[in-house]
Length: 198
Image (cartoon, rainbow, N blue to C red; front, side, top):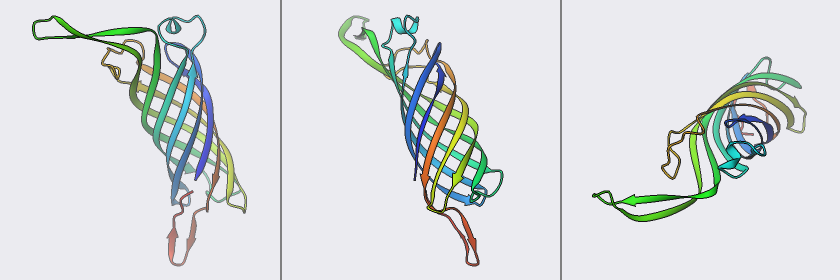
């Protein structure tokens, strides 16, 4: 099982700092390849007095669900190991409007028959990234390492409240992630390969 903390910058119509906390689980496919499922929760704070801050509140919440693979340069069981990263998944962005919006419901004749006040909204999107990382290994089956990631989030055309998304399109980002993991490394023996979740 892995536990990770990441921080970085994401472009949400402007440069915005964010921080995330996540958990992951993975298994080895070979001595040099592993696969991981990740769930990350984070927040992003908009810059004060920005154009975007005039319409939505500063704190934005992020949720990422992704799958990544690590391809090790040397053996994954070495004390110091380096690897490349390819990953992707889905992202969710949640925010609150600074001034509530009113949505109208119309009948077949085009007459307004109901209204709804919308204070919070969100988006879903696709998240893709690449990167590089390293880890330290010790005999107690614990590792600590770091990853440098670069990617982009491609947001949906409409918000959850069915408003047109004319603000968030593509959000490139860079992030640095610190990971602590526990588990057994990949071993080869005469009976074949054994894969361990960690």
